[in-house]
Length: 502
Picture 1 (cartoon, rainbow, N blue to C red):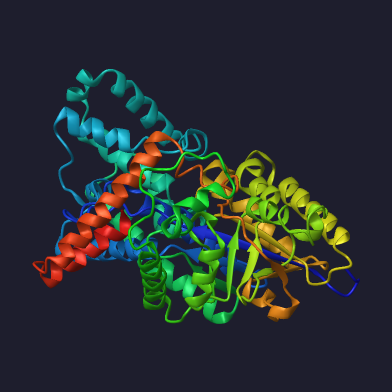
Picture 2: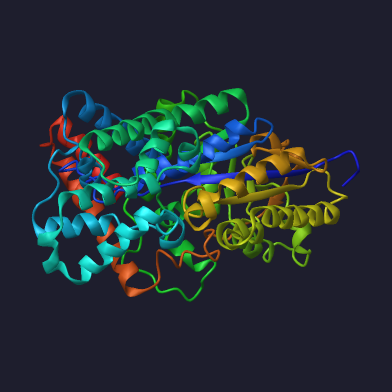
């Protein structure tokens, strides 16, 4: 790499939560969507707002966008006209009377203990004392009868205070006042907290849209309900990276290509509804790719996709022109299928996993220095390839509860120092696109995911294979229900959504 060129680095954060809402009752079974929204999704965008020279890619699962918007609407409805909130935990913030029965109280305090003990509980002395009491009550439930409602109110408030983003704690004076109060929280305090949560939920998607319009970040999308597309298209594709895998009785998912096109198109439609434009890129669910998957993504209009390093390693091993090359010579470049134009980027597993799993226990400055040192070594190894691109891809929400202060110091230093580094260019995948003839051709992409380069997380043992057989049964039942012609328009919509999230 010449002295004038800089190493291109793409930080791609994948934002995803499963679909937790029961489509029949409308009630949320787990609270993780709104909790990650008020803690991680607001913090992640705030760091980019604070460092305008930094750039990144954010990939959103469409069902996550829909759930965030639904939560925002619920909170607004509750505060405006007392419309019931359909998340049992969040709803408690707005209830004048907290649970009275022993079982209901135990359920509430158990919910309020679902947090990282070191980083989210022990950090706050008042919350730690409440959590210690709650732990004792779990072991001695008969004593719950003698616990006053104030205990429930306080642990409920502290749970939500702990789950707020660090940028919110530092910048919102109302939150600082609630934290300074420490205990004795009233219904008014709980409703103030609910108002703040509502503001965060209502504004977070728009904040990403604004940065995308500025060109500071790129937004990409995953097919609608996070399907493992290669297996929908061809169950046998699991054997490409794992020849000895035991497959389900289901030989082929019914109309898998049709379902795949639906997920791609519905994902694009949902993205456009929230952001107002069509994305260029796609992080396929779990980085799951195959030749057929990449072809279908290109047909859907995407210009780039990304996957895991293990997938590329398996594919390079079967490519005569690339086999035997050192890792740094094949990893840091975009690829395309033979006769295809879609660019495929592959994750540096080592660097991505340092952020995801290792740096949480390091001092932030040391971690960022170590990360930059690795990048400088890559730049030196790739000095004869000025178009080299290092792809860092990982979940945008799950790592930060293991970091001090929700990763505040690490992320802020990471963006500031990378943006200022003379030999590094923070960029986006779209800005790394080159003409198809300049991309390296992969004659065959060995089907796999970013998890070990295989599909072993989703197929191959009796329980997982039985689940696939049940999915096939569900699809055939759906087809029969649609073909009978007896469902009204509302029922058709519910059936379609239920099928999508299976």
